[in-house]
Image (cartoon, rainbow, N blue to C red; front, side, top):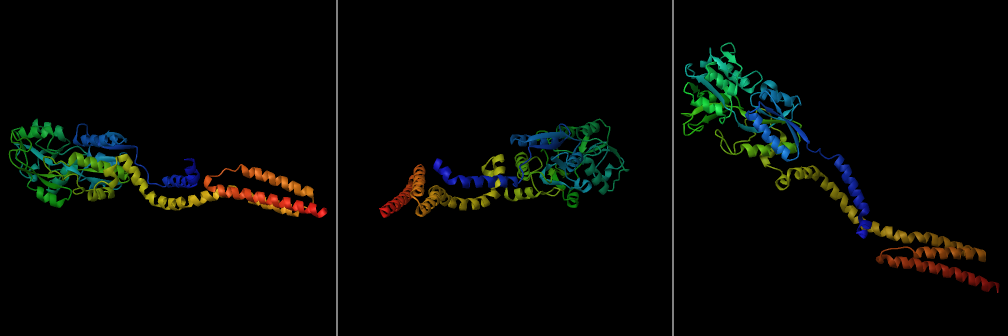
Length: 430
């Protein structure tokens, strides 16, 4: 180990320094905390938000889920940077805009149900004129959609009496006779949908204009509620019903980290990929049917699936490797010459411990040759003895012993040379 450190300490130090500098310019890590705008308590959006929150928390991300008034409020909060993630009904982007947000895909159908009391005959949209109709509260997605469809059918806001009710509240008001019709947006699994279908005094409109509306608006899709699909034992509904359906879409801030986006899409596939009463397995999530532009990461995911590293490693490990892979090539490029240069550098460092003495040896040889008196030569000879003693203390690996002994032989050679010069001078005086 000691020999290894002597050989590669310098290259390792350079590589570590390079890594530190590279990490400073590396892509940022995913956020440790995100905020999800959910929806009304007990609603399908709130349930979806909690599912995404559980998935993110499972990967060590802190999540706050906000209770909101619905789709309009959800989209507004993400656009205002008060939330990072939300679920939004399609049909809002044209009115509210989509600056600063991106979609990760459509999640599930949310049909527009038009229920009415049988005492009020309603077969077409135009038949809603003059009735008391629940179209949802201000700021809700159902109100935006209902108002759009009614206006396109030639029914302006003055042609009917709007009630700001939605969901369970609208269903209860309809059964109580407080309103004549209710336009509500919900998934088919809601308990109050089945209750309305069972109620003999309530009827569901089969929307013959569904196909036309789907052609007019790309974010709307025509769906069929098949006979008995809600409850086969009670045969609910009693016949096939045509519905028009917006979709719930997963929306994020357009600067949300791509790793978090991929994790959300994985969760959406697990939650919604199995199909539903209105959708075949594998239909959702999908980049189709959204009215907010799909993010680049979502496009990549739908085309190629999870990244290669994500298929192999857990989220945190895969994300780290994906952020650092761009550093591998320059680091390898740096390490190859460093590794190749390490042995020559090591040899130079060891031999330098030996060769550094040659400068002193040459100076002493010159001083001995130029000495004019015996005393001067004896002084040089004493210094040479000290040099020989110092050289004897030098420690080098066994493979470099020949260089060390060569130095000692040269010191001895100079010492003998000086001794011969002194002897010749003494003979000359005799």
